[in-house]
Structure formats: C-alpha cells, structure tokens
Image 1: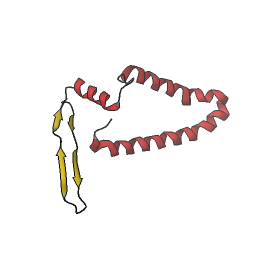
Image 2 (image 1 turned 120 degrees about the vertical axis):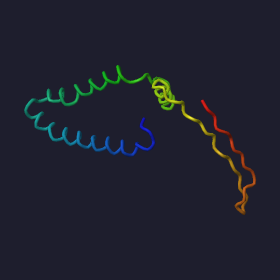
Image 3 (image 1 turned 180 degrees about the vertical axis):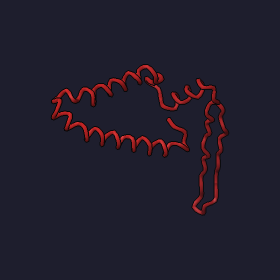
Image 4 (image 1 turned 90 degrees about the vertical axis):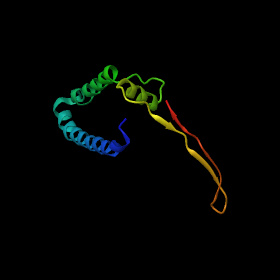
Length: 111
C-alpha cells in the first residue's frame, strides 16, 4: 500500500527487517528451548503473534470482501485526497506493414 515511487524501497526495508528477525529467532530459539523447554515458544512466537492480531483487529481498516484498490480509495478519501483518475487504455490495430489501421482512444474518467 505504498505509492509507486516508494514501493521498491519499502520492499527492501521489509525484506531486510525480515532477515534480521529471522536471524534473531534462529539465534535465540535453541538456547531458550534448552533452558526453558517448551515454554520458550510463548514469548518468542505466541505473544508477538497475538499482539499483531490485536493490532490488525483495532487499527487496520475493514477489508472483508473488498479489493485492495477499494481500500486504498477509501483511505485516500478519508484523508481528504483527490480520488484516483482512471484512464482507459488506447486500443489500436496494426497492419502487417506496421501502420495503424484502426485506433480507439477512450477518454479519462474522473471518479
């Protein structure tokens, strides 16, 4: 849900954060399991998972039975930003010589 120009940066940050978390879990799980037995999984996996579920339940918008673009549109309108412009594609038919035979351009639709 990032703007297009920040999407690659966001993906890189999330990927590196994931690698750091994976490394820390691998580093701490075995010693914790040896020392605390099965109870080591409670603070390492169950508590963070439960906290994430609570966060999603209370702070994320309702997304049931809706597409991602509908949720983004609602967030944009909620924050007073202009709605997205929907631009229909240009449809063209070309002959074998490469010249345009038919071209149909649909206009921009403001929502």
